[in-house]
Image (tube, rainbow, N blue to C red):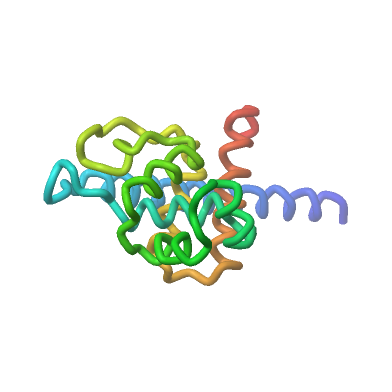
Amino acid sequence: MLTYLTFLSAVIRRFIYETLLLLVAQVKRCIIFATEVPMNKASEVDLKRFAAEVRTKRGKQGLRAVAVEIGEISAPTLSRIEQGNVPDLDSFIRICKWLGQSPESFTGENPSRSKESTPKQIEAYLRADRILPEETLKAISTMVELAYDAVKKGKL
């Protein structure tokens, strides 16, 4: 009985490992293809990604609390920005500071990578599609973070 349980445990671990590897590979492909699409103008802001980054960082915090945290921005303005509307320049710069990213990271002017970790970037791209329910998005994000942590610790 113990041998059977050990075998079953190994099979399940292997299945989870292979599933996570496939998921990470697919998400990386999505990110690569999404970032390789050239924007129309060098100064155009990628509003879809900007809105996704804001939604990701805000998480479950209320709009008002985050607006206060950012400073000099209203909750309705923040809501419109999360829906993909164009922010005014002052709001854009304040939110970029709050996100910890340069304004250029959301334009075609500077193709440098975001300072966000890869799992957070993956979560932002998943949120940008708005297809997945919140529970599913969180489950995938958690799986990706756990996979990255396991790789860092040498367990995968």
